[in-house]
Amino acid sequence: MPKSPRYYKPESKMKGPFPLTSEELNKAKYNEYGNYLLCVETPTSHKVHYVGRGHLKTRIARGLDIKKYTHFYYEYNTAEIHQFKKECTEFHRYGKANDLDNKIHPAKPTGYHKKCTEFGCNGEDR
Image 1 (cartoon, rainbow, N blue to C red):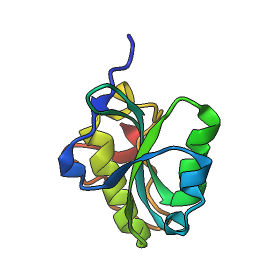
Image 2: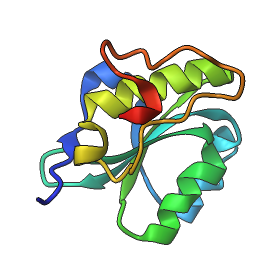
Image 3: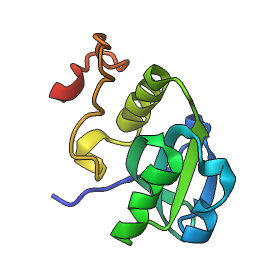
Image 4: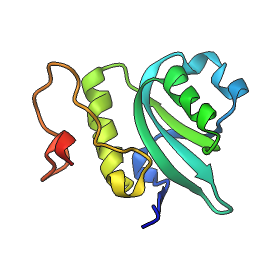
């Protein structure tokens, strides 16, 4: 069954959309940590295809190699646990592995023992 990614939702409260280009990623503001969404532009909005976290410039640049995504949204977040919680929220918001290019649930940070923030989710088992 083909995937049907979801359109960007204002509830995500991320900055963007920004064009996914080398020129854009070379700006100093992306040399930080946080969360991001990789999207494909449509005539009316942006469809979210991938949810991630980590060093923004490094992680978003991986989307350049795929040549599938056209835009991204991001949010600064230096605390790894907060990055994980935000990634879980966005992963569930945009359809989980059924509708995203993410193949698995976001992994918990090392040493963190709580499950996903989504009610009823068992974390990596989903």
